[in-house]
Amino acid sequence: DAKTTQPPSMDCAEGRAANLPCNHSTISGNEYVYWYRQIHSQGPQYIIHGLKNNETNEMASLIITEDRKSSTLILPHATLRDTAVYYCIAGAGYALNFGKGTSLLVTP
Amino acid sequence: EAGVAQSPRYKIIEKRQSVAFWCNPISGHATLYWYQQILGQGPKLLIQFQNNGVVDDSQLPKDRFSAERLKGVDSTLKIQPAKLEDSAVYLCASSLGVVQGYEQYFGPGTRLTVT
Image 1 (cartoon, rainbow over the protein chains, first blue to last red):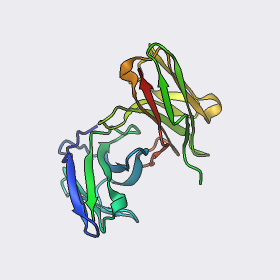
Image 2 (cartoon, rainbow over the protein chains, first blue to last red):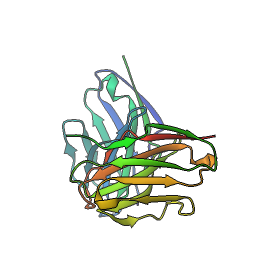
Image 3 (tube, rainbow over the protein chains, first blue to last red):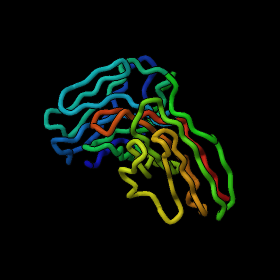
Image 4 (cartoon, helix red, strand yellow):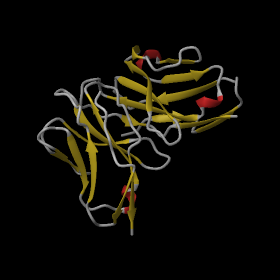
C-alpha cells in the first residue's frame, strides 16, 4: 500500500470549510483513497473513498488531483462534532493501513 | 440497523493473565476484522476473517494471540499470557465483503490495560 502523509494537526472555525490535505505520491493505479475519522473514545467511522474522480456524499467531498498524488477532504461546514482524528489511507486491498492521521480541532 | 457490538468495554488485568474479547458484527457482513490501537497511533490490523475462514493473520502475534469466528458470525480474540505492551484498544470491524470500496464498520472497542 502507498504511504500517506498528513499534517499532524489543523484548526478550523465552526461553520467554515475544513480542508484536510493528504499526500500519496507513490499511489499505484489500482489503489483507492479512503478517508476515515475517529472521534475520541469511539471506533473509526468511514467518510468517503475514491479512485480517480472527485466524490461527494452527505458527509464530505473528496478531491483527488489529476496525477493522483494528493487529495483533499473537504467538510463544507464544520461543526464542533467534527472534531476528530482524520485518517487518509491509500490501498488496493481489504486491509486499512492507518497512519497517525490529522487531528482536526473545530473551534467556536 | 444495529452496529458492531463489542464486550467488555474495559478490562484491567495483570501481566501473564489471559483475557478474551467478544465481537458481534453487523448482520449479513461476511468479513470481520480485529485491530489493535495503541495510544497515539492509528489502528493496526491483527486478523481478518471471511465467513469463518482466516484471510490474513500475518500481523497477529500467534505465540500469545488467538482468534476464532465460529459459524461465521461472532468472533473472539484471546490473549494468553498478556504482556504490558498489549495495553491498547482492541477494535472489531465488519464489512459486506473484501472487494475494494466496501466500507468497514467499527465497534466501540475494548480498552485493555495490562499492569
